[in-house]
Image 1: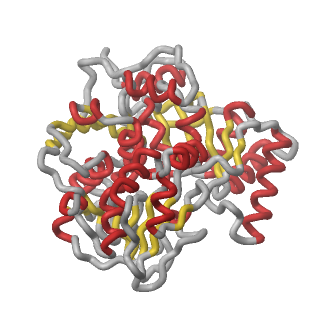
Image 2: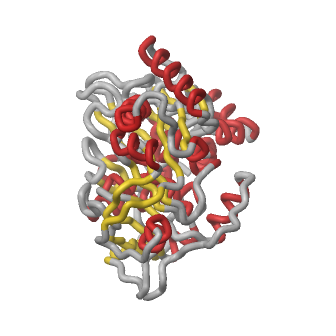
Length: 418
């Protein structure tokens, strides 16, 4: 019987032939924890296994420090010290206090096609851009994974989003996924695997694919996936890695629920406060005054995103009374942007360029907005209080819209200035 990619991954991970709807106790390939979620996961692990116990496989646990880096309080510093000590005691070699955002570190260094990966963070679904099944889990579940290397799952059904047509200039993967989220709603893909396919996706680079998979959770998806192809393999190779395993893909006659989207003529899309599925064409909201622009996050902090923004900002200045914050997603992306002069462009335009981390995205570190202020952000969530004051407003955009907006101090359509 034909299988989807998701069913094939879970069949391999559970050691038996499974279908969507089956319950399985599956072997985990990789587990990711970071400085916010790791403490509770470690507490759960110790309660399950007892003091002195060892994690199931120290080589498969990745610990990242990204949410409050550098430490922004004494409590955060104490937390970081505890996590470093745990990693050293457990022999966890894959822990990084300065590498960047966990999700970017994972796709650069660890994730391979066909893997079953869990992370104690909802945007773990980003790794599916490499043809893996990756999903976020709670800290208690992660404690179980640290102890056993296994976890219960209900094998998800798959929705195939078939994207056709041609993207216009200054319209990207971010706009496609925002459009889809607006179409199906915040719960339209609850516990489903969101598989992005079609002629548009096939032509997208890895940066756009990562963005789309990252935001699958914003429509309730259990995972976001692009079936692996040459783009996948070339990306892995560009990271200095080789993949010589079996490249799993869905069978041609596998069963999917299908949703079609023709993007021909589509405008840049914007998620309007305070819901990610409250999506509008840019023509509906342009002219809105802004106080802060944030270019970065696991959603749009890659070199390709920074290059798009820098090309618009070169020779320009950030509007008076607007704060522009730029944060590359990882050390690798930072160095690449540095060598190509992109960071010079940002600094000369008046931006604050920060070290790789989550920054304003999670609303608990730096770059927060005050009551009544408006943030335009390339990140993934615009919930109340997400970037500071609950009286603030957040608009989610692509990097070109963010850069154009920073120049003019109001939401600006980049197609009208370049």
